Image 1 (cartoon, one colour):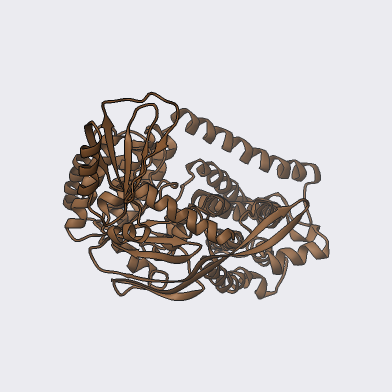
Image 2 (tube, each protein chain N blue to C red):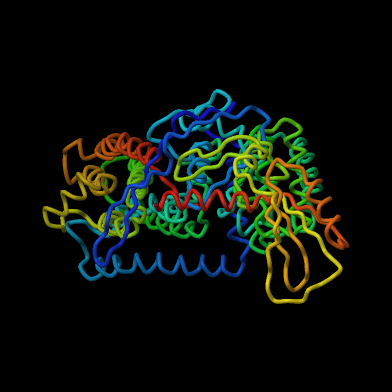
Length: 261
Length: 324
């Protein structure tokens, strides 16, 4: 593990890199807040029109959205290096990460701390607070569980992106795969899985298990199911995926061939 | 101290033929073996595509080879990577390790933190690097605003922040003007004098001739030559040229050869300059004497075989042989 001093230094450097271009920084925060809001607008439009989705009311949907999107926001805050990992492969700049006495994972996580994403996190939290205040649930520790689920959401999304990044060691470019396997799935995960047909539901439960951080545990917490496994499913998926991530990553590094020069 | 045994690495390359892709396996390194003592200053040369970059990447722990073993100061670069890289400094000619949007000093600060260099030591080191590489003019400028030569000086500085024992430099003097190049060469010589091992990959053969005590020549992943520069010169037997400027000028377009039993000799029709090729190993005194006795010589110049000529011949031979 790298030391604290390195962490702060890289974090500061990352912030300075973005604020170096001041106007661009401010504008991009505003724009980012803009399309985060637009993202949510679709969901809110559907809710207002139909009053409920798949048997879930507004407050419940808000909590589902919040759990998934808080994790997303935090991941995007630190995960730029993973999201855009193909850049390291295409340019061969991954070499520069390998010559440092620190785990490549840490260097990738601090590659660019995307401060614009604070808008995403803020919005998701705000919606979550609305959800917690308005939802009817018999669980007194609901806010605690929501907090835990948000963390699980962050961890699971980090793992999924980690796996997709490792694939780039072999395919070099993985942007299309990323869109297919992550972006579209995450957009789907903010809706209750019951509105999707079987194949898609299974996909989001067993293959790209984003359904296990929001839909299933909340299903239990809202009393819509008595199955305890639903509540513990996020921990299972995170634990099961971890060895896959690590293995693929280590294999990838061994296989890494850099570029010509 | 650097021990390479039987190193082999193959790449799979896809060549496009119309709509189809042809899979080709290229042997980048072919059972390469050599060993280098601590404190060596090694020049690494070879025709383009010889496998030099691949070797450096294996030695810096970036690539894992298929076969063979490498031991640098007891470390295996890819097995104990994190501990190993604390002792090495790298400059990749084409890939900048400077944070592009930030002043150079910020990169140095981040590297200091990354390698856990204590603050007072860091301050002293940056001051020394700034002086020896003339960085003070642009130390506080963002890297993207630097000229290529300035950037390369900053890169060399960056590779030395943590005072590594071994330096791997890949084309470090690209873009540098004559003064900067000499300044950096002097600095590298001094670092080598302090006991640092330097592994220099470059196409600038004069740089190699002036700095490196040993030369490693690679072609198609195989070792072609490893030894001192003098031994390389002996291998090729290029002659020493004695040039004489004579006062009586013939003023004709033709160059004509002069008959002598001992040497290859020719006279330029336009300038009247006479060139005598003295075979390698022989003294130039006899040829000079002969010229002065037989011609109205105004000036004599003695030219040792240029390292570029030697290497050019070598490369031609290597590339010609592989094609044939």
